[in-house]
Length: 284
Image (cartoon, rainbow, N blue to C red; front, side):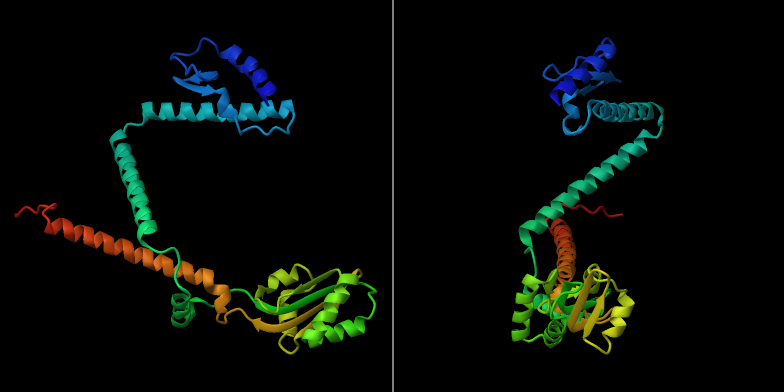
């Protein structure tokens, strides 16, 4: 990278000497000047990866520098040609004021509000506002076992998966270590059906229809055999399980608390200013 920088400096700096109208920063290496603005060698740090060729490095540096020069030229030309500068200054001042107020509000929120709601608050919200927590994707609990085509004792394995008791799970685990390609037990947590469908060759509609009457699904292709045991199903439009909705609930609660806090703070600020005479009202 340092060799490339020296090479780039020789190409660019040699052809651009004499165009500067202001003194550059003496602690940095200037590559070019335009409209009194300098572009320095250290501004390329982090822009050019170390694992690309010299030709690609030069092309990337050239594109970056051209963009920088174009931005400077556009801005300087705009300043000379835009007539309604007062309106722009007002917009800038309004934007600056909004940014400062926003940052101040965020600091107040961090100082005076707790970072997350309690478990009790979240569950109370879950019960009260259940209509806001309807599922937009199907969820399931269960297990998925994937075997290679021609795996031994498939009849026994199928019975173990369908049964799903403690003894069967032990047998499945031992068997999968020797013969299985993949074994995923998720009967203790909800997962999106789409996550399962990434592993088995079946459409979601077909799977969900079959789960309406059967909690065991099996299919195969030329290389693999798939056994899916479903313990529980939550369908689109049903109430989302509390455990999967916690993050959403926490966000909704905290967003409400933040809004209320800022509103109350602004009301108190105004009322205090009126009462202590900071605000002066003139009679008409």
